[in-house]
Length: 271
Image 1 (cartoon, helix red, strand yellow):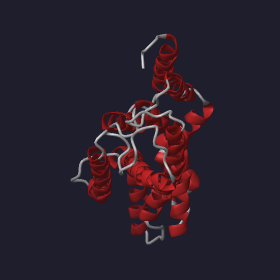
Image 2 (cartoon, helix red, strand yellow; image 1 turned 180 degrees about the vertical axis):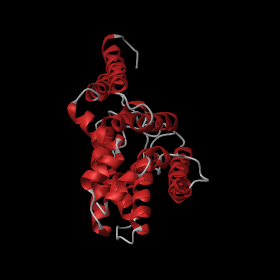
Image 3 (cartoon, one colour; image 1 turned 45 degrees about the horizontal axis):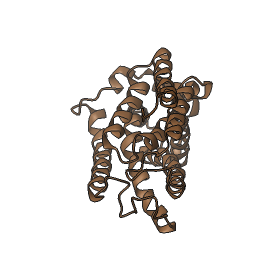
């Protein structure tokens, strides 16, 4: 950590969303990137006549996907990573910028926040590669519909149950606690220099992935390019980290998700 004085920052002021504040002005470039990511997803959605995965990929199961189709899926998942996950990290970025400002006033060297952001996004880009591979495999096994949602009620139910049960696990709780307390995270894992900021971004990205991977997999159940559910899940993950910081809320949502999955297994044609 640069200096003990860095710990005297008021978190409530840091978490302000008003763009007239210094923190808000620093958010503008990131907000532009996030907006561009959402715009790119919208264009992908509109470009595909079936409102499926887009990019000119086949939308029917009898047309298996090849290696080029897999490569074309990657921009979609990477765009989803930026559009859905980067907003949830904005409060942590505010904390980091305030720490950098305080260090500069003391003539202390830190690092560039862009390296932290790059490390964070890199983790989710890695997830995007795995998610694209999963989509490719499910498509070729005829387990996805034309709109890239699961064609099997059992698979859909399993995804909901998985997401619901994961809400109750110690790993979820541990990762979520790090995402909810960015100041504590930086106190525990501070590293100076650009390489150190890159490492911190990777570490924060890993905690974020550990918190949200099961929710992201729900996109297979809801439709990979379903923009409405994409927005609702983004709002939920942001709220879970930054607004409703209560364990009962996480577990209640887990019960709802698992209950929905259970109903899909027991009630015919619910999917």
